[in-house]
Length: 195
Image 1: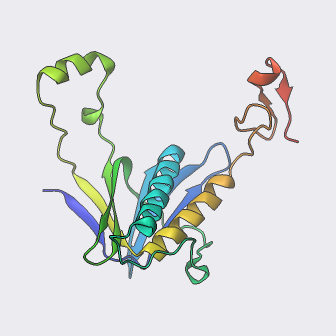
Image 2: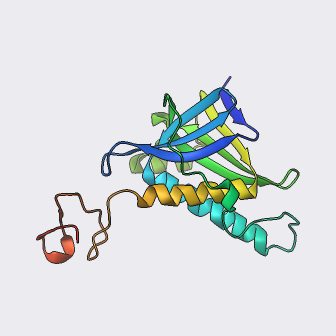
């Protein structure tokens, strides 16, 4: 039986980082009262989650079927720039994430499942899997968060701020520039410094 870390709704749900730019670890963090859950994840997972939440809310805004009040941007009163709460004890590393809309109580539902080596499929295994049914193993635990559209927009705004706070992109190739520069592929390997 899986341990479900359920927050319906959380008092706080944010993404943040620990570490210096280029060496940062990203976290999702949910808090309700004295209960705090932190899940580590990759920067690309944060970007994908933000994009999908914004797409979902934009689709709901445009839909004549939905009577939900969806803000176009993050409400100012929900803005959260505070650091992650301490202690940051990683419950698990995020693998698969799902996103849905519950029209009954007009909430965005986010489920985060732990990363599992057993769920990773190599290209060699694809042919075998097409011959048989592949069942992903049951997770040991899961983070389940249900938030209002306003809180979801605020989550996205903060996450974008956190992502942009990392290393600046190279104006030529777009790759991150370390404080001591980087080898720019568009400059034929010449070392470019931060402008």
